[in-house]
Image (cartoon, rainbow, N blue to C red; front, side, top):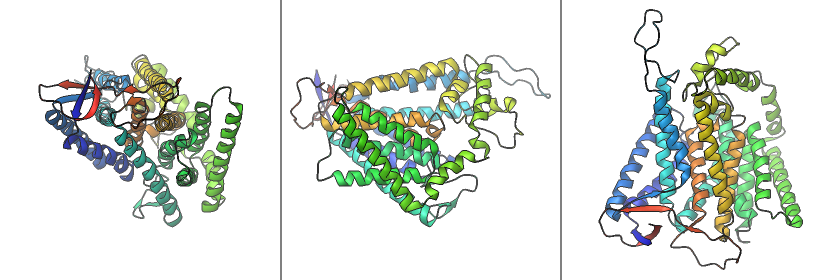
Length: 468
């Protein structure tokens, strides 16, 4: 049964706040400092309050039934489990009464659990309040336009003030790029923003009058990514372009496949040429410099060897969410002057921190994401298909980048990643304001939006159609 739910003022403010969060978390240095993270948590509380206000004035509590929320819920619950005390540790240096927990660092595990809970609130809100075709187009436009402007700003900054963010904030212990303290984080952000216009281009959802604008935006974001000097970003860029070509080409259509491969090569060549034109030859030698750097953070081989020891010594439950730094120290064979806080490989770190349970949770999330994406990519709506394959390619790029870095630890990147996941889900929904299009007979029809209203006895009024 289909019911009509009123679009309330709270819903409108909440959707605007979600769009603003995607943008502002990136501008606030990626939201990695404690003051900005505190503000992020406050915004999460405001989202909940607006959600409650929307339920009161519309007469129904809405939520999305997507199974992709389950892994994040499970992570929050598992984080709570890891800090439950069971007994006490033996007396150490005269100190007694220290609780024994699964986590080697209960404090940071609690912080990580709170952070995952905040991300869960935003993810659930993304899924629930992208509830119309108009809103879907708006959020896609916001991401593309912001990606273009953000890339232009980053390129300008690297020419005028390469060592200071906004010309003010200097980070002596890292290599900043754009508004991010770490250049790899900027590259990861660009990996996701440029995939949406690229996906729309590859499926033919962009009109001739707008193609030049889209090509310009894609090229500028690609140039900014390459100028950041991130090797993981470069690998992810190439991998995601190949993924897009495969995803948008029929198996037996060799001519189309060859054409898209040619366009992909041309795109990558244009990005490389643009990088050399803007940044000179150093824009490419920067990639080689990071490979030969003696900085401990680039010694991934050593870090991964130690991580494997952490995994084997903390099975099956793991060392605790965000407890990697504490777990790393006893096995570190270097001098210990620089403490390693991340494994520079999120898959190994999930095993180290959450053990077998973390492996199962992560595998389920990736399985559901790609299953949902591949199903929704068959939709007859060309725009939705472009959004789906573009968002899925953006998620794929981050998953590839996570083999070399820990980009998803940055709040701005995790928020944009969850937004792309929400777009993958929303692209398969059928909304009340969909424009009527001629659908091929064999095309997969869109589903009704999987948002469930719980009637609280008040009258359900017009404008958003949801599935009861």
